[in-house]
Length: 363
Image (cartoon, rainbow, N blue to C red; front, side):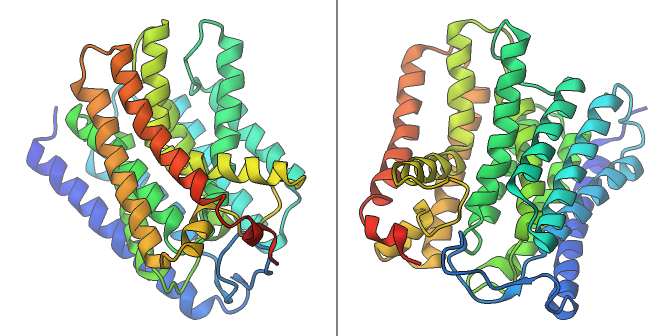
C-alpha cells in the first residue's frame, strides 16, 4: 500500500512547520531560563567575533527536531518503512547523538582536544562499520582512511566556522537545501532522509530568529558538533557516493560536487589552517583570523557577511544540483569550468584573509 502524494506532502509540510515552531519555542525557553549555565563570554583570542555573553545552547533545538523528524517518519509515513537499512539508520542516529553529546559536554566542561578527536574518530569508525563510507577508490582501506579524514575534518570545520552570527546556520541551510532539492528531483520525498532533513532545515530556520545579527543566542558546540556529523553523513551519501563507478572521470565529478557543496567551510578551514601553521601556531587554537573576520575588517557588516555566505551557498547549491541531475555526459571540460568557480571562491576568500595580517595576532 502506498501513501498518495497529497498525504505525503501534507506530512512533509507538517514536519517542516512543527520543527520550525518547536525550534523557536525550545530556543525561547533556553533564552529565558538557561541563566548563566550555558552562557559564554569568550576571551579576545577566541574564535567567535563577538565577546558578549549570550546563551550558547541553540544546538539543542537541532537535535530535538532531528528526533522529531525520525518520530514523524514513523507516524506519518507508516508504509514507507520497507527496505530501510536498519543498521545504517541506527548508526546515523547513534553517531549524530554522539556528536550532540560531545558538543554538549564541551559547552559545559571544555573537554580536551584529544578527547574530542577520540569521539570524532569513533563516530567515523561506527559509520564505516555500518557501510556509510566514501567510495572513491578501488581499495577499501583508502576509502576508509578518506572517510575518517572527511568526518573528522567536517566536524571540526563546521565547529570552526561558527565564529560569527548566523554564518554556520546559513551555510548548513544551503547544504541541507541542496540535499532536499536532490531528493525532490529524484522523487524520494517519502524517504526517512528527506523527512529528517526537512525537520533539521525547519529547526535551523527557527533558530535564525535568535541567531541573526544582532544575535540573542549562539548554537554552541552542541549545535556545531551535531551539524558536523550530520553534514559529514549527507556528504558521504549524496555527494561523494552519488555516482556508480570509480574511473578517473567519475572521480573528478565526485570531487567537484563535494568541493562545490562544501566550498565555504572547506575554504575557511583551509585558509585558517594555512595561516596559523605559517605563524607557527596550532590550527586548533581560536583566533580572529577566519575569512568571515577579514570580510569584516574590509568593511562588511556582520549581516552583509551572513547574506554573502547565504548567497554563495545558494549559488553553489544550484551548481551542485545542475551537476548531479542535469549533466548526463560528464567531461573534463565541465570539471575545469566548475573548478574555476570553486577556485574563484577560495582564492577570493584566501586573498581577503591575507590583506590585514596584523589583525590575526590581535588579542
